[in-house]
Length: 310
Image (cartoon, rainbow, N blue to C red):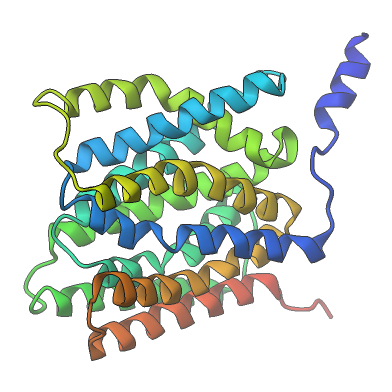
């Protein structure tokens, strides 16, 4: 095969660009992810946060290796490895570990409201990554959304004197996931949807295996069957199968439009927290959640509708 033909193969999109199907794939991914926070809250009652955050990635990496090997996928090339490292750092290591540690001391519904910043954060990273020049209103709405999330976190912490460390972890998780989502959505157009998350899991596997071994230094967790089932869901669905649908939706795109579907995720998560964990919905959760979701949705829509040129 000549160099020219090889280059042609590399540049050919792996996924078709039928926008009508992107929304449905994205919705399926969001539905899968909406159980992540409540089930993490269940798992941390019987397992260490380090074991959950790293172990779920090891489970998913084993599945990824099997899938890549059985289907004989080609290896990523050149700069794609660096981009996969960004994806791995954001969604394989950063988001799971940060949210798991945060949920040891805060409720699932509280976490869902702070994580509701994710659509705006993903759109912001996409703007920076694509070197776009959105209207000033986009940045205003994004900042207002961040402020709304911070005010909610401060009120929930008992006042405006201090921000709980769990909220800082959740904000860090949002940033990490936004980086992973945006870069992964772009990379999925070259490698394929499930291939992108699979290779990212392989890239992160050595570190995740080491962290899992460290977490098992004092022995296996003495968890209940329900807690083990929650851990299994986090490893198989939240960390692996859910990304099949989500990255496929982002790759079909447009990325900013599909990312809006994330706006329904905190609503679903809060509902599952009430149904599965019996968490009560306070007025601060309702007001804070609505404020963050509305600001995030408005910011994404402003980016999708640039001013017309006269």
